[in-house]
Length: 384
Image (tube, rainbow, N blue to C red; front, side, top):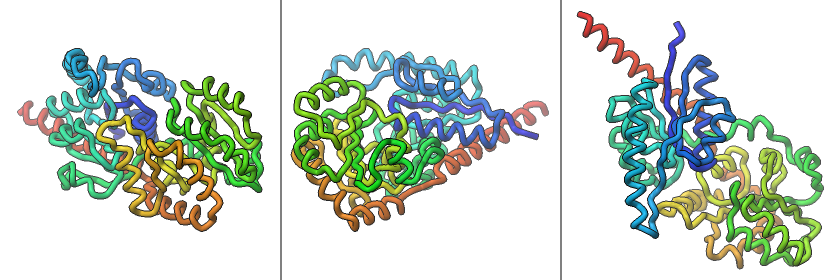
């Protein structure tokens, strides 16, 4: 008889949390189409739009992160956390999940804390090479912790760890093209090298400024094609500044790359922030990459993500503060070195975990099975 699973998946805030969460949900659904999956996110964050678009129900919590600069504002944050915990308790009581999964982001804290308190098994999916404070606290009660990097016993009990990697967007693999076809579809010349510069969907100021500062260098290297995703909030400003300075013919400026699968297939080298989700995608596709970690993240975890790859010869690291002077010159130098590109590509490909979503889904279902069996036994004993 087909089991009827009820599963909560909590977290979000950025695509780096949302895409893995949806990948896990989709994998569970592929195994058990009747599974009830409820997402719990943070109000006014991108998951409140992206999750329903993917066909799942989501409930938002009024949660916010701590302000590390204006500490007095955290009085309200503490109140929102308490309110979110009360809401999470009510959600769990009504939905009656067999397991709760936390993928990181504001909402996962109160949801997993209350689930564990109510004796619902919890699973943490830690995406970064450096665990955040919330996940370290939640790990004490968690039944399983799925990680993407070696050495995570520094933060978590080793007996709970499972090295799975990070799930990635299924669309990247489904829509992946070979390099020549991808280039033709994008109107690029397959005979020339292609550099893809991205800073996330919102963009990255330092990466954008590094391009603006070196437009002449782009012009001088007409044998390279540049695709530059500025991010939506910077697009108009960057477009005006490029037009004023004189736009190089070999530069494509866009606010958002709608077909990232094609862009990655076309790119010989990628410049990116060092979010865990992005790194997992580059690994799966074997993309040579230069990582410019964001300095505006908790525990500086993007730098730690980047260095975990650099140590294995799987990426090049440039600090955010050095991007304006060093980034473009380094990228142009690397993209012209066939051996360097191949080495970076092969080394990062060796770190790929293509079955991450499948493995995590299996762990989630095993926890649910154990809980269902335990509850069934308890009810039988109560009837005696």
